[in-house]
Image (cartoon, rainbow, N blue to C red; front, top):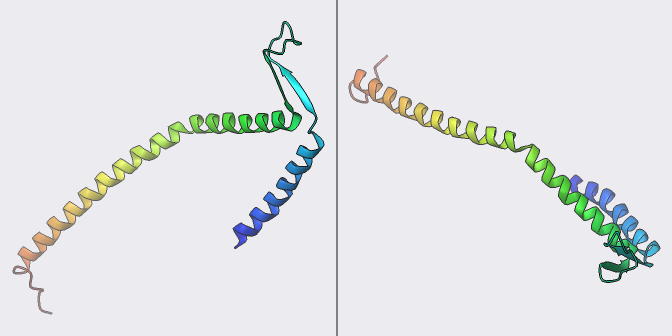
Length: 116
């Protein structure tokens, strides 16, 4: 419930801000991809300004996500290795536990508990 409220508190103003930004920046602009002849329309893209703003935002999110994912690779590798070691040790512990139960059963007369 609190997660929904927090999301509402954050996402509602953000959505309103994006709508206002889109309405305020709806004039068409041309992004020239030819640095030597910017007036060349072959290598130019004409779109509303907010499209370029949103494209830059999305590109920044993707690049940041990739950079974070790549920088945390060593921690994921360490977690995988430790999980393998933990499974191996758990298997060994179960083997030793079964062996201890077998030895205890043999020592007490094949499964009978000693009388007090």
